[in-house]
Length: 180
Image (tube, rainbow, N blue to C red; front, side, top):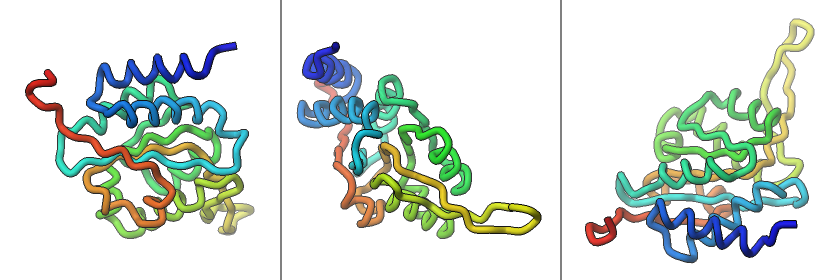
């Protein structure tokens, strides 16, 4: 049996080797990685919100690092609302959503579908409803959307308040010249 503390410590050091993170931030992310592997044992999951005020602060890099270790990673910047909901329902991935600021400030229908899925998906049993064709007619069908999710984007305020309330914020900053 692996020692959880040792795994968190190893992950913590690895993350800080490749991204500018405080010890607290890397510890949160390392612990969240383990959480993605046991999410089915709980009733709720927090989200991780990786954000910065400016471009080139390492948000995507952190998602790339998480992609190496989280359970069943799915990194995407943009997909249709229907594909997003169906993939989460079928594959139960750890969603690594990049460019959330664009997703929430663009197409209103997409941003509302995304917000609804995120609002429902933090709790076991949460579902998003889509119309599907059945026997030549369209019917409403619920799709389970409970899964671990990491959401990255510029600006903390772009994420809807209900989603921010379910999220652990990780504020990124650019690497200083002395840190190269």
